[in-house]
Length: 445
Figure (cartoon, one colour):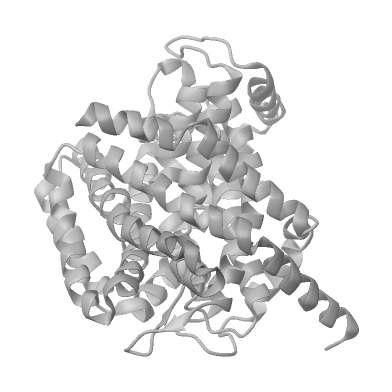
């Protein structure tokens, strides 16, 4: 069973998938004339001005971004970056940057489509995302892709954002403070349950409080480490770029890495971290209070910018500067080691960061899975899904997760395919809406 899934997984995340993800981002970037890079200051202004949002929707545009960031700023930013660098060399970070730059256009297009084609469910809550923009925006012959996406989306979260996250938390707490995994699982179950059972409004309000605090705290500590070793930053940047274009030599326990390894792990982990192209984030953005799809798109693209170009860069730079790669360690332990070498007690910061990041990922992804279930069976599926979601958390702390992780990772790739097909087909509409919005703005409307 594991071997079959490994084969499917290596195909699902193989060269074709990486080309499709990067290619879609590049196509959208060119079609938008690289507006996503030029309008970053405008997007930041919109985010700060439109705190409450005007128009129809359930949560503010700011809360929608925080909800999507709660799901994306997760273990991928701490463990995922470390894994990419351990397997692909420092050059993997360079390819994560490239993925993010084109991924901003993907995330922008996703949110524009999500707001344009969203619907209200029987309870009056807004639902949107790939399943809706496929059904409402594309010809009937493509509709089966909407159901495929919703099916993969409703299942993938149980692995990616539920059992795997609770397992990571129980491991780090057990290593650092000898906390029994069962205790961790039960506490997490109660905490996540208290938020998830309150629906999107409670998820959004918790995310709006926790996400900025934890992201700023982590960035600040990383900046301190970088500032203390500022003289090593130019050399670290040269190492990252050189390793991306020429491969990296073996050193100590680090086996060296080819250019292909840097590209493959950089892109795959970059996508895993910022979720651009997977179709998950637009589900949160569809709930935003706004009548302007383009404005929400600009706020959405900041998610990729913050997640990868800021948070992942911090982790990657600390690892390269502290020169812990030769140790041969990987994952969260590598990031822990880097911070521990930087200052006393640094490893506890990574432990706390991991716990918070995993908690917010669980609450953010529960909303994604729930909206996929609503698309498939209607609002009657909400309560059973929430109960199952909460009950699965302690299970994750007790079982071996290699197989679950593989299945979830594969389902994640299967979510991306219907979404990317839809974005390629809806690209011209996104370009048209964007053009009209900025033309009207220029006239002074």
